[in-house]
Amino acid sequence: MLLALYALSRAEEPPTTTEEGSTGAAIAVGRVIYVVDGDTFYVEYITGGEGLPISIRTYLASTPEVHRRPPECYGAEAEEYAWQLLFGRTVWLVHYGRLSHDRLLAFVYLDPEKLSLFQAVMIAQGFAKADIIHPEEDRFEAQMIRLEDEARSAGRGRWSACR
Image 1 (tube, rainbow, N blue to C red):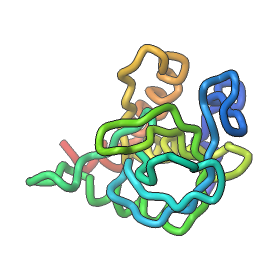
Image 2 (cartoon, rainbow, N blue to C red):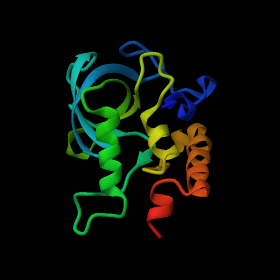
Image 3 (cartoon, rainbow, N blue to C red):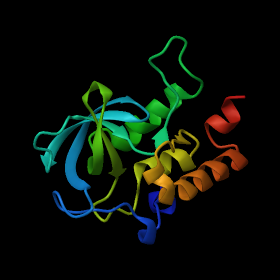
């Protein structure tokens, strides 16, 4: 699979540093040990995770809920795809803060070069929608919305299954 096709361009890549730096973002590396649903999972940290929650919530992407009654359309498929992409894999996390339920909000990269962004893959394949709610996200909004629009136009995933 060509995951890099769905990555943010290098020029627009989220800021990265090796621990804490001038950008305010930091990198942690972990192995995914459990997938809760399409946008939340648990990691076992390899480096950079000291004091951080092990529960990770993807930044800028949201998948249908599977743990509600009734589950939302295409939530089970999004969860299954996340299991396939993430379980047992090493991920590189650029984190931006904590959410409720002690979850870390993060960009999730599937490779050390940070070319394949998990959220971009999920949106481009129609498993997630862009989740733009904070003003500081504006510089990434256009790219995520473009990926969502392309998936919707092509009828990928939830965009053909959930009408």
